[in-house]
Each structure stands twice: as structure tokens, then as C-alpha cells.
Length: 333
Image (tube, rainbow, N blue to C red; front, side, top):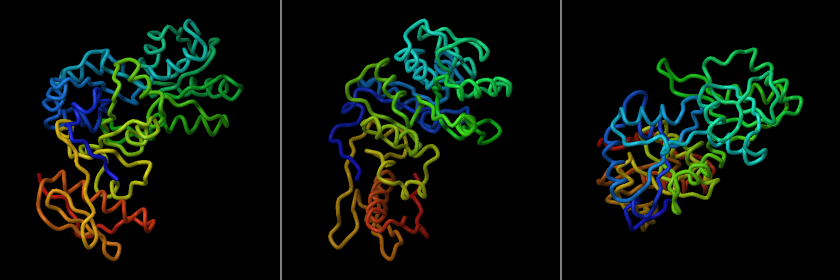
């Protein structure tokens, strides 16, 4: 249930599509080791694209932030859900079309860069693009809601219900989308993960014939990769912990699993079925007995996570119930 690669991933795949928060940085700081791991992957010939559902910041601002953290990145290496949303409008209505933009600078800049003409909520337009913006006024949302209800095509940059703010986990654009959806009765076309357009736009912009999605969220990064039929690497430096991992349904499971971005520099082997039951990998043995997960042995931390995931998923698929985790703790680094 995990994939295998005899080659290190940065040579087996020619493009890494990297989620940002929880993968490259957490809050204002780089994930420990991330800049060095990414530099090594790039030196091995892998292209790097920094992919974000956040539609509020422009690629230039994101690239500047990455460079401040020690990660080499240019504006063309960053792809946002606002850019993917603008592409959807261009594909449908053509360049030069007037589009109502509700959100922060990232939405308007993406529309303009795509050859569209961004306009306000009171102006004529062929469609509306919505995205997160902390300064969006309720009056703008009301006018946009009425226009969507009355038939104006709607593209939502993403449906993320939360995002990490300096003051804690805050409501994301998905909360606004839910409000507009309930008022209008309209389902938007969604550009960001887990919908496919953002990943397609990344490949179109950055190139690559063998892309690998790298993320920390099962319900956006990994599900998005599966929808796009792209292999994925889940890293454990963000929101996914042991409880979330073992309860992942088939559509949320990654191809590969690693504690951090060092996984790009490694070959990946899948756990094997053990004689007498359970799974073995790298010196670890994981088995489910009476619904409870038990892990014995010794070895690398990355291999512990892999054998635990496979044993838990096997039990979930057979029983329909997640494993019990009492007394189960990941080894220290």
C-alpha cells in the first residue's frame, strides 16, 4: 500500500511540486533541514515548484519569503491557486475578458498576468474569482453573492477551511465559499487542491514529465495528487500526525512517506508481509491484534512510520475500523 522506488526520488522524478506551510516552512521559520534538502534535490537535477492554495500573496512575495529562509526560489517557481483560477477563466472566455475579482492582491495580479482585466463587484464581467483576503468587505461579498446567484460563473481559488495565522488557526477561504454556496445554491469551479487545476497549472508553467507532489496534508496535497494521477510523498513536518495517518482512507494515502524532505534524497522500499502476520520493514515489525497496533524491533524512524502506516491501513481496509494506538509512540529522531 506504499510504493517502492529503487532510485532516490529526486532522480526517479523530474519535478517536485512542493506545498509550502508544513513542508518548507512552519509559520515564519524554515522546517529544519528543508533548505539543504531542497538544494541537494535541485543539484541532482530535480525541478522544484512551490505550490500553494493561498491566493492572497503574489508569486513574487512568496519567492522573496522563501529566499529569506535560505531556499532558492524565483517568481516563476511559485504557482498559486489564484493563477490556476485565472487560467480556468482564460480557457473558457479567452484573454482580455473582464473578470470580477474578490480577494487580496494575489487574485487581481494573477488575473492581470493571465491577460484578463480585473474589475470590481459593481462592474461588468464574464465571471467572478474569489480568494482569501483579510480586507475584503462584507459589502463586496454581498454584491458578489447576488451576482453569482443570478448566474455569473464562479471560480473559487480554494476551499481550505483554515489557514495558519500568527495568532492561531484562522478561518480560511473555504468558510467564505461555504457561505456563498449556501446563499446562492451554486457550486463553484475550484482551482486549488484537492481539485486538479492547480497541479495541472504547475506542470504547464514549470515543466516536468514525471511530477511528484510533496505535501503534509492528506485531504489537500495527497488527495489532490491522487485526483491528478500523480505520485505523492507525505512528509510529517506539518499537520498530519499518527492518528490522522493510520485513519487515512484509500483515497488519502500517499505513494511514499518520510519524516521530512530528506525523503527526496532517498530510495523508498515498501514494507513486506511478515510470516505469522503483520508487516516488517527495516528492523521493525507491526501487527494489529484485537484491534490494537503493536510495534516491536529497532531501526530508522522513517521505517517505523512506513511499517505502522501499512499495518494500520491493512487493518482499516479489512475491518472498517481504525487501529487502537494506546501505548504506541514514534521513536525519537
